[in-house]
Each structure stands twice: as C-alpha cells, then as structure tokens.
Image (cartoon, rainbow, N blue to C red; front, side):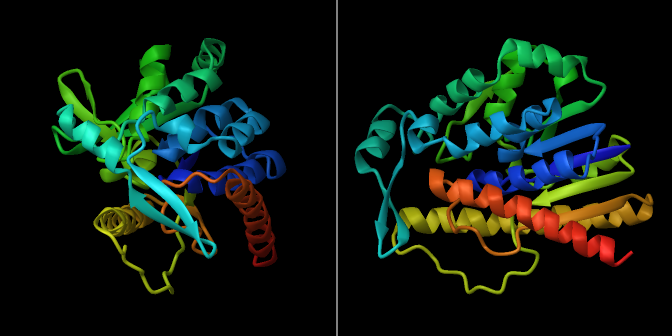
Length: 299
C-alpha cells in the first residue's frame, strides 16, 4: 500500500506540487492513500484526481487577497528582502470586535470552494484511494484526521480550510463544540498516521531543508518576531514527527522516501508571491527528477 504524505508549509506548498507532479506523471506512482497537513491538505484532493495543471494554476495564481479577508500584516520589499510589519488598522479592528486572532482567512475558504467543485468531490469519493486531511483540535490538544469518505462536500471543504488556518494570524474555527486550526500544530508531517492506516511505502514531501545551515534571523519588530517564534516551534514539531515516523517505519518495515527542500525557500511562508511560487513549483519538479536519477544510479 503506497501513500503520499505532504507536510505543512504555507506558500512553500508550490514546491511540493512540483515534486508530486514528477512522482505522479513521470514516475507513474499510484497512491492508495493521500495525507496532507495545512498546505498539503489543499494539494492532495487535486493530486488524487490527477488534476495537476489545475492545482498548478490554483497555487501559482493565489494572492494575499485570495486568502485574507482581514490581513493582519503588510509586506514591504526593501532591497529585495520582504519585511513584514503589522497592519495596525486591521489588528485594532479585530481587537475592538472582540476577536482572538489578528486576521481572518475567510477568503481562503471561498478560494477552495471556487476551485474544487461538487463534481470533483463526487469523483474523489468514488476513488479507491483515501484522502485524509490533518487538523488540530485545540480544545482537546490533539491532531484529528478527516477522511473524504466520512465527509459531505461542505464538510470536506471546511476541514481543508481549517487545516490551513495558521492561528493566530488566520481564522480560529469553532466546529462541533471544539475549536480548530492548522493541522501543523499537532501533526506537521503525518508519517505515523499513514503507517497506522496501513501504508507499506510512503513518499514524504517535507517543506524544509534536511539540515539547517543558515543562521536564523529573528524579526526586527514584535509582529515579525512572533511569526519567527512560531516558525521555530513548528520546526521542532516537524523534527519530532519525522523522528517518530522513522522509528515506526523501521519497526514495521515500512519504506520511506523523503523529499526535503534542497535549499531554504523562505523565512515567512505566509507571503504568497505568484512569481516566486511558480519558480518553486519548477524547482520541486527538477529536484524530484534529480533525486530519482541519483536513487536509480545507487541501485
């Protein structure tokens, strides 16, 4: 049983799309199970349907306005470097409205539904493959996994949206008397869940470098500092997920094929730059191709 696992990573999901395209179109990998977290959850329904061109278009045309109906920050480019500063008006508006998040991402929910039709959902339900979305239940402090087989169209779109909500910068969602947000807070790289569901070989796309050689630059203002601290915390979650996944795979004789980003793509995956994301998609495809050739030569 072969599975494809795609980690969280915001805009870096474009790189994962390129890797997955190569594995599906060039290597002809057929997957019995797709599991995604956050940005991975947005990719896997389209990948399972074989809609590569469509999801490429969806990813490389998304903008900040497509995602945020209330954007909590302003991105300024200074000497080729993106600098994130707080959007005081929007954040204060959230504060006075009694909201607990700096911004809201209802635009992303609309974007998901506009690019994933009921017809697509019905085709997905008929597949033999299972498609699973990772979310974090903050109330229970644990990860939950939502299969397309157990969802209606509305539920599946909502879980996909919830999985990608990077709280507190995006929406915190109350559902079934629980509060939910980004799946990455509890299970950023859900290798263990894939193994628990019976996978014997797993292609894992991890949207970080395998070894961090760069010196971490911490934000120069309180808002960017908070973003950096969240990123550092999630890096630790990622390392934990991979370590546990490797141990479980070794114990159960599961083959893991790990695809890391070869270089650091960005310090802020909440910035969605169309041109940059197109480049990342191409880089992901080329990286998977090169890695595949190396693996073939080593056999």
